Amino acid sequence: MVNKAEAAASFVPEPGAKPGRRMHKASLREKRIKWLAYGFILPAALFFIVMNAYPLITVVWDSFQFKNLMNKAVSGFAGLSNFREVVAHEYFRTALWNTIVWTVLSVAGEFVLGLISAVALNQKVKGRLLFRSIIIIPWVVPIVIAGMTWTWMLTPDYGIINLWLTKLGIIDKPYYWLGELDTALLTVVFVNIWRSFPFYTISLLAGLQSISKEVIEAAAIDGAGVRTRFFRIVMPQLKTISLTLIFIHVIWTAINFDFIWVMTEGGPLHSSETLPIMIYNYAMKSYNFGNASALASMMLVFMISGFILYYMAANRKNKG
Image (tube, rainbow, N blue to C red; front, side, top):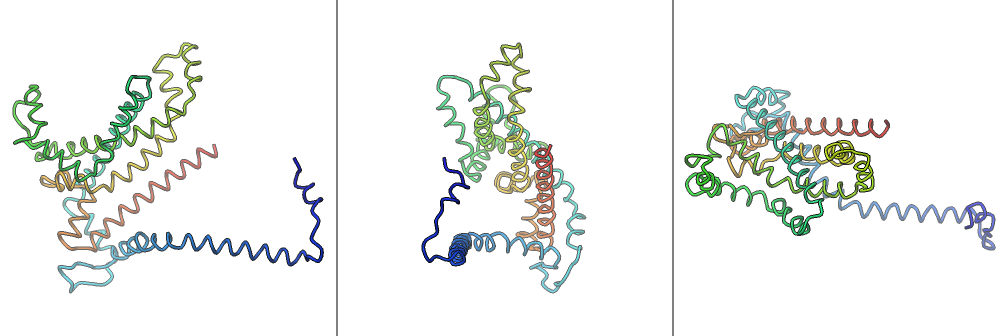
């Protein structure tokens, strides 16, 4: 092959061509390409500004303003009044605790079930291609349809879940799973796990298929048991994808509104109300957009803080 030095030495400029003119033409060409790239990026940038950046800035701005459609006489700069009012709300701590329970249990259940199913589907079993196709069905079902279907199935009067549990002798009589203080939130958590774990399954299955089988076989020959091979070889290989999945789903689950609203609307008696439900109630029921924006801004700070911590941890790992 001809290296760069030989190519440069063998280059003979055209007769009458000036180096400065050639450099000028190359510079103009680079500028045209750069402006063309900006032209392709501009529509996406405008879409982002209109659909994301502007509403986000508006929410942050409204969080420091008195903005209540039921009391337009009070307006202007509010400072931290909206934040203090939100924190002092009688159900704020309940909503905060429900959000933590909802997020932690959902993400933990999704990961564990997704990992188990991924390991199972990674085995050489008959019909695994069919099982891999079927398992994605809960994930592609729209949240509203899934929530309404499960609500009907859990109804004490005609729900099939209560019918099965009664016939199996697990419960004595039909139980109102979504209408009791102790089980409403946990029931929605269960349904959320059912719908979301296939995403973990597919992602972790892809990670499992990338692990060298020779390494696992060599460890087995050396006497490593199934548990040792799983926790010492397989899980370290899945660490990066697992942390990424968990981080993304912590954010998605914490701000999730659809499932809880469709199934319980935050009830009964605020027992399944989370912070996104509280934001909706502020904005669409009390018409207090100042308080709704303040609570949304608090959640935004939480998400940004989580992203910064994750980014710092990832950088520290790469440097180490």
